[in-house]
Image (cartoon, rainbow, N blue to C red; front, side, top):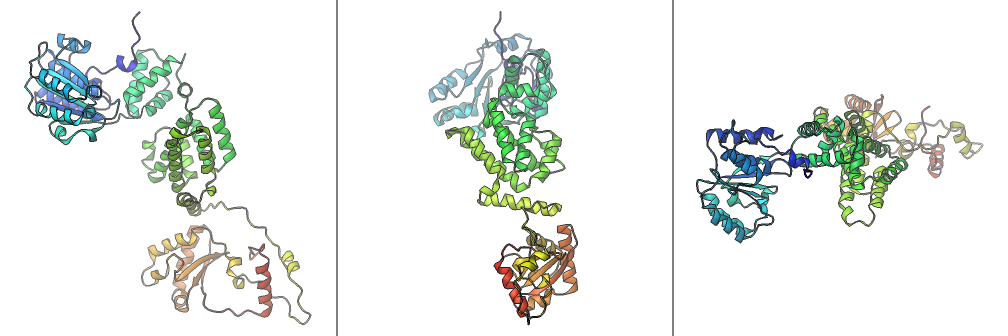
Length: 542
């Protein structure tokens, strides 16, 4: 019985037309082969599993093929068969990681001057060329610059920045892009059909996403899952085989984070952990999902075409509405920090639990990023007209309030009627966080100088705006500012802008904070009483 051959080796491309996702590279090489305008040295760069070595071997066959077919090797002639079997001594594949010394390159240089004995051209394929030492690169320079006519160099590397500029300038460089998820999934379906593997479309998409742009990784994952599964290979079986969390679970966990439901989030994490899910993979799923949601918020029109597939499109759209941009950035950074610490962690489970608690309860953190996330959430709630507030202070009825007022002397007049406009600002003002900043930004878009200079933010701004019931009060720091803004056209604009932000009608008025209000002695007693009873925090008109 013949030995089993891994799928990525069995289905290695044999012609340029078989290579997936690298049309620009393969078409250019075919054109050069057809026209005969070949270079003497090529440099293939790109991430792992994108087809660099496969294209190098195809190119080595194509230049020596006795019967080329439109730039492709025929794979049938004596030269093609000898190269495929590894019996051709004139086509050498060298691993620079293990042959990186200057002596290895000198031996190569000495042998390269001899004409080929079996085929037309002697070809050297140097894989991972960036692993060569500096002295080895120097020894390679001269022969790459002026090689014999029968010699062809094909260099391949995943780390282009480590290749000296002197080598780069002597080679034609081809960049291999990451293969799209669609191309990988399509190739996986083809291989599955050839191998009689019942591969579900959703499972193919999951494997393609996990391959991260590398066809070899995708085929290796398919090989692993198919060998451990009997029957149809579904997405859930892929998750179970690889020990990672499923799409629905990642979206479910993100939903608990959005709701700040710590108990449910920890309960789901514990369940996944008990089922054998790898915590690093789970947090990576969450980070990918947070990235998808941030893409949807910043590019809503084209965002669906840029998603990684961690959650369904419908789930992603719904989750994006529940989290602000600042929260998503904070979630991504917290997840990345936790995952980077896994290598030196004594307890990954504890680190993952602490990460979830911090994400569900941002009020536990007082760093700038966490505060920014909470502020952006409030701002988005204000813009949408839906403000989630903390538990309101207990309301005090008029009867209860009158019962608490100390008795007046017999000779005193009747108690004054409560008027919200004369109550202290700290009692009546109920301004949402971020309201004034957003109102100022909206006003400055329409108002012109010199009045626009009065509407700024900061502690020393000429005007401080507060929301008092159905009134937007412009608290001016001097009489001149009061005179400038206390005009119908200015107040009407402020009221219109504030109403649009709050989603309800409000009016605007101006107050001079330097003017001393005339208050009766009875009202002063009433105000003193209010200041001493701090539980009275909000008195409504009705």
